Length: 391
Image 1: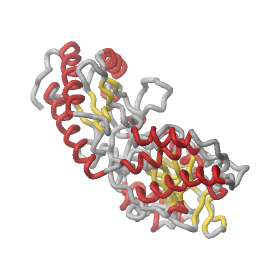
Image 2 (image 1 turned 45 degrees about the horizontal axis):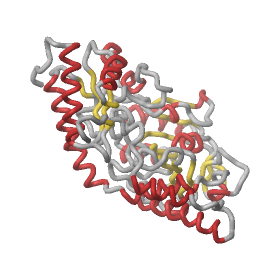
Image 3 (image 1 turned 120 degrees about the vertical axis):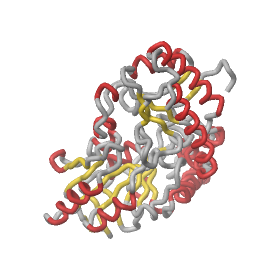
Image 4 (image 1 turned 90 degrees about the vertical axis):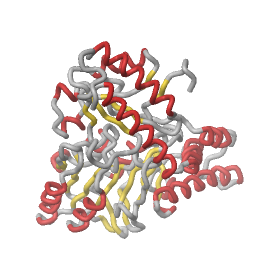
């Protein structure tokens, strides 16, 4: 970026559209066809959808036939969080839903479960699922004759904390339950494998990897398992999601998937994150970085300075040319208390000042250096006594 341009550090909310995705969408928009039509134009549209399905299968380690496109990850989550799960065509309903305390709002809303059949799984002070508590709760449901459905995100959208999915999967398997993983923030940033994670269902989204908004997918880890459709009335997506496919958005999603180079990009982004994180702590030594001592996404820094208010800092950063966030972007633009930090036991006065910086494919060294300059000026104005204190 040149010195006069804005700095975008909110990739966990949405990442800018990749040129390849835009090009693929333009091509798809030039075709008039419905992907369910049998004529040549319809088959061409179907080809774009199926190409994207193959790309997503490759990116997640799933089978092509086990991918169902949706309008986004929220729809995917609401669809699969249902008691009505079938195995080999026979209903084997989930009797209770267990969700992590730091999950995205679309998971905490509990999908189609009766709220009385939902249990929150506590997290540690680092934001990691408390496995001993999870095992006790999930095993209790199984011992009572129930079938648990456990929903845990691969990586947190606010802190970037990565959950220990292998251990959680063992708990779920021992209890004879189902495991759903919200992989929205993980896709494109860390290796994603539905087989290695041993989960039954996964949710993903396009606009977190440089594809368009308005498209996501359900990815099944088993051929024989399906959740009852949320949207019915048509035969699209193998009768698992009715409605004409958004061919242009799906094509853009597929093109963005083909652009991913997870290992190389993770190394580049990690170096930028680590430099910026160290600089933030140099600028103000008492800066608290949430989840710093556990595995995190390579692109995310969630931090706070006691006494600073997030809303004030956000406005100041925005006026200085930096787009950052106070946490999740799913609260209608409101700056409010973070349920994630609350679940981690972060004191209210510290949590109310939490900011999130999230990097992505457009981020450069110049971006992080310029943000450090902006932040130094802000801290000097608001905390002059401690600015520059060594970490």
